[in-house]
Length: 107
Image (cartoon, rainbow, N blue to C red; front, side, top):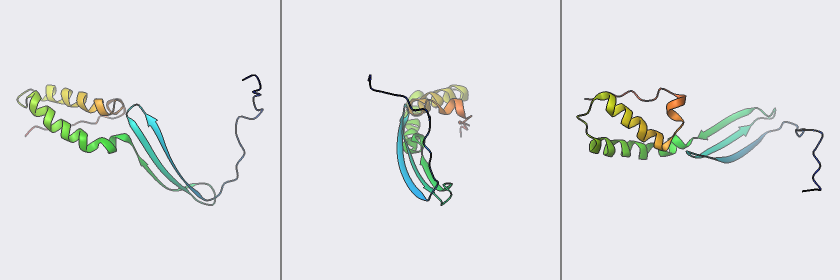
């Protein structure tokens, strides 16, 4: 790349206007889908963001039901909570660091 010459400016000047955009971003836990609509001033008027966790929610719940039964529901609440968190992190490794996401109640 001997012909590459860096620009003096690190950004592109833009004039805000209404528009709509779609994008997806790959992450270790799956695909993040985005749909954004902008008004005439370039401000976000509407957005829809679909993170991988919500895409995997049904599978996470199914695997929890099946896996916990095999692990043994007679175990202590702490063991069941830790095992559940481990399973959930298989789908979303970031969830346990970003939220206190699991309250376990045994009936």
